[in-house]
Length: 393
Image (tube, rainbow, N blue to C red; front, top):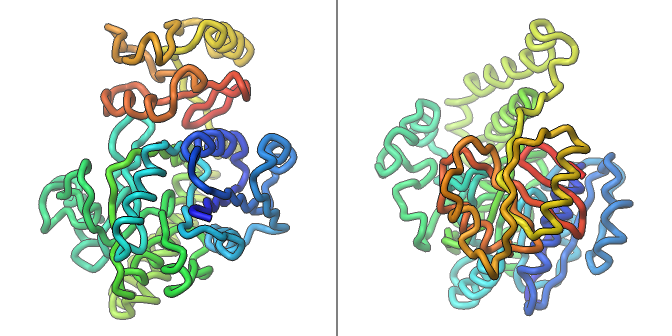
């Protein structure tokens, strides 16, 4: 077996469905198994997905033991020479899978590789590569110096942003959203540390691989990552777990740093807990967690039948009529939304995933980075219209 893909799911069945469909296309011609560990989802993920993907190995957990625990269950069942630890809110490309396999085959000294992740608007995701967090690096991150001077080796080490995003380079930390691991390496250094319930488990594993003498690499092959931190509460909880796990990371690998940062991190965690449980409910009321979706205006690039289906979905979900429809396929309009003269005023470019390959969609999205356009997809096979913060069907 060449490749095992391990995905941990928790209440994101529609994103996972798209992830699996993209993965099927991306792994054609590669001997591959896919293992999905469900962390006690409450959205009917297993009932919905298992009949649709009978080739997938489904592992159901009775309780949510955390991201590390779920992945370790999948690792224990994996048979591949390589193991890809993959987030369910990603869209992978054939280029990325084949490129990683080829690179790892040619470079036996590399223990893990990551790839070029892009955000919902086509911009480069800075977390695609990171440096080891030491006091100076943490200071530059906290003060914003790493973003202000991204090309400086002195200030930009947190994201290693002085490196060319289009070139392969050795890095220190690989993102857990897409970790392409050598199975033998994982056996030597150990699996994920389950003391990390969420976040920094990838940094811990990356650091252990570096200490073992092997290399970590960034490869310029593209995938898409939703990330999905859309509500106030999700952002606060993200920071809470991030800071809590950072403290665990320091305690394990850098005890002196832990002493240095112990009180600031504890204070940050305490403030976040207070905001989540007391401050925001007092200010905004008991329903403060509810997220109001902003108005959407789609630039639809799709086949004729898909355009009609998307119109029906928009009517059904009260998404308005102020959308623009371009009947097109990759064969007759390879430039997609780039051929549309005026894209101002649209919030999303909505691609028909049956008319365009995911490789092409992501390639086109990267050519308008930082524009107001965010990626949305539609599949007639599933009947789902997917954006970064909502699913419509």
